[in-house]
Amino acid sequence: MKMQIPIKVADRIGVDRSYIKKINWGIRRPSLKTARKIIEAMEGMISLEDLRPDIVNQVYELTTSDKKMD
Image 1 (cartoon, rainbow, N blue to C red):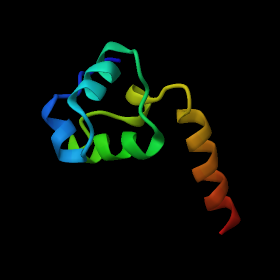
Image 2: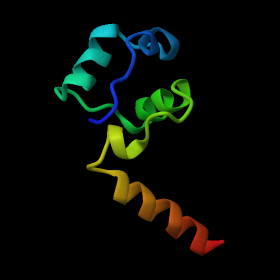
Image 3: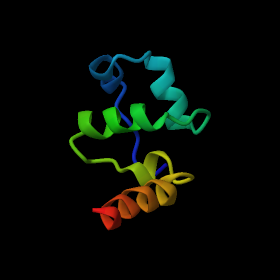
Image 4: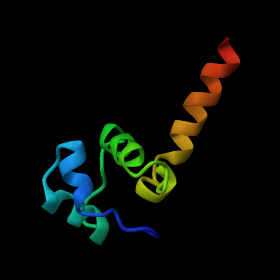
């Protein structure tokens, strides 16, 4: 991951500080829900691509296919 999540974000989003450390170290990956909370808490300074590069394309495809259905 390019950018590290400040440990204080854990308190703001309601997760354990050790969980944020594990995300920073690459041991854990946040769920999509937790990733969104982190992005919001960091005011967009980190992206879904930073947090979950493995699913960012899938999420993009889902959101663009929803727009095509409108």
